[in-house]
Length: 214
Length: 71
Image 1: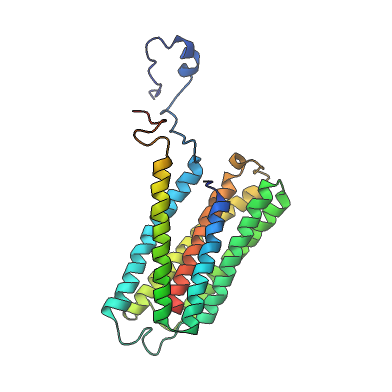
Image 2: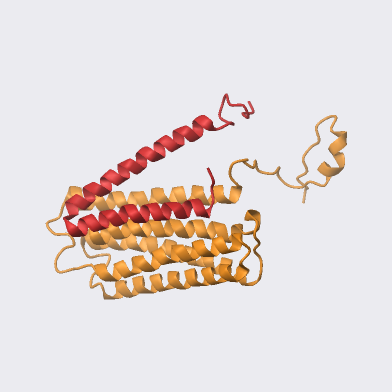
C-alpha cells in the first residue's frame, strides 16, 4: 500500500526528520477557543435539534392547522402523572451526571463512578417506564394522526435516550477501569456523554410540556 | 465563554425553570395561556441566541478582516 506521506516543501531541511515519519492526512485545525470533541458533540446536538424541530412542526400543524375536534381523540387519555414522574427521573439524572463530572474535575473518582452508575440506572428506569406506558396506552401509531405523532415524538426521544445509555455504558465501564483523570483533556469520555445527556433531558422537558400538558 | 458540560448544565436549569413556569401556568389556567407563555419564552430565547451569535462573530479574532484571520 502506498504510504500517504506529505511532500516536503523546498528548503524545509530543518523538519525533514519529523516530516519523513508522518503518515496520513495533515492534522485537523484545532480552534483555540473550543476543543474538537466538545465542538463535535455540540454540532451534532444542533443537528438533532433540527430533527426534533421537524417533528414539533408536524405536531403543531396537526393540532393547530388541521385542528381536530378533540385532542387527544376520545376515548384516549394520556398518562400525565406517569409522564410527570418520568420527567422527574430524567431531570434527576442530569443532576447525577453533573455530579459525576464535578467529582472527576476535583479528582474524586469514587464520586464520578457513583454519579455515572446512578445516571445510567435512572436512564434505564426512564426507558422502562416509557415502554411500559406504550404497552398500556390503548392506542397505536396507526390510531389517527394523534397516535402517529405521539409515538413519533416520544419514540424519537426514546431512541435518543437509548443512544445516551449506550454512551453512558462506555463511560461507566471506562470509569470503573480507571481511565479518566482530573484534567479536561483526560475525561472527554465523560464530558461528551454528559453534554449529550443534558440535551436529552432538555428535549424531554419540551416534549413533556408539548405532548402531555398543552 | 466556556464550552463544557457545566455550561450546558446551566442551560438545563434555565430550561427547567422556564418550561416549569409554562407547565404551572397551563395547569393553573388553560392550554392557550400556557402555549402563549411558551411562545413568549421561545421568542425571548431566540432573541438571546441571535444576539449571542452576533456578538460572538463580532468578537471572533479569526473572522475575515480580524487579527487572526489567515487570508
